[in-house]
Image 1 (tube, rainbow, N blue to C red):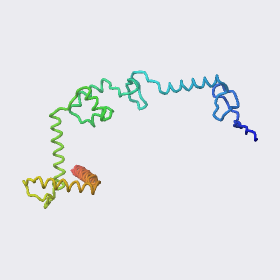
Image 2: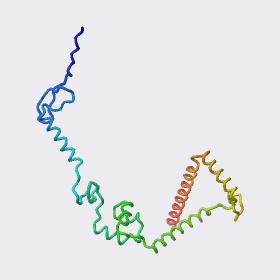
Image 3: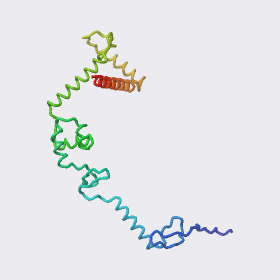
Amino acid sequence: MEGKRKKRKPRCKPRVCAICGRVFTPSTNSGKYCSDECRREGVRKYLRDRYARTRKVPDGVRRGADGRLYEHKGTTPNIYWTGQMLSDLKRWYPTTRNAELAECLGVSHRTLIRKARELGLEKDPEWLKGVWRFNGKVLGAIRKRNGGCFQKGHKPKNPFPKGHQMTPEQKEKQKASLRHWRMANPTALREMARKSWETRRRRAQESAQGEETTTTTK
């Protein structure tokens, strides 16, 4: 009967203990400590470091790496609003666009809206009506420059005359054909929306360039 094969111990090179700095030869390749005392001290050191990395930051106001003041409440830092920022927000929010006011205060668009809701601020109705009228005039000028919504001689795809009321049978037939078309072309609607968006963006850029050219000429 053959004897059992002896288990060979791994050949480990001498190394320095991570705690006391003494040179020792570990029994395994993963050994870091020379004794049980150094091993326990190493575990305590690891737990202290982990606690320092994950510990809760004390509540208060501190300056972040970007130079902005943050208010720490629990584990979530929030932007600290100074008295001057709050007074400017209350004064200019009703009659100023959110993007412009957020840039002046140095906060994001979403942070501005959230703070305004907390304070119960709202836009001035008369100012909103003026903004809507101005936007309507801009869109009207763009449509007039582009020849209107529909070109001259445009024929609608609707085969029925103006004022025609569809019967229930015609409505069901139209719905069935639309469902069939969607199943046959699953990405067609997405492509149509993309083309429409690109067309509107191109026309807006062309109108803006035209206005810049007119202003420069004057």
